[in-house]
Image (cartoon, rainbow, N blue to C red):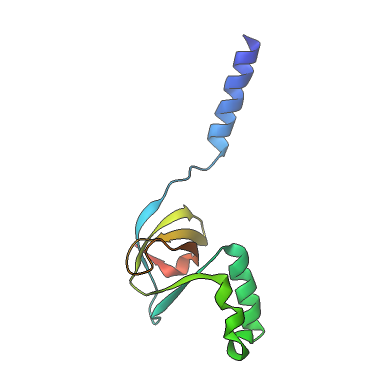
Length: 112
């Protein structure tokens, strides 16, 4: 009986402390003044790209940044947030020729 009680307590703790993986839909990608949205492979690729851009590499050799992208979509493309976060989210593009592209964006690029 004590074993069952311990198991129940452990499961309750796990359920209370793990975040559910729930997709949030209906986002439009883009923000005022931009025509394209970069969707990065993951957070590490985003951080690497930012470091390269701060060093001016994107102006001298943009081909070094391209492999870090999952895709580039026009502003107005729709997506669902598969792993929504406070400052950034993993999204799945749901419209346009790049539908199915999955990657990382900052939440500045998500509009309800």
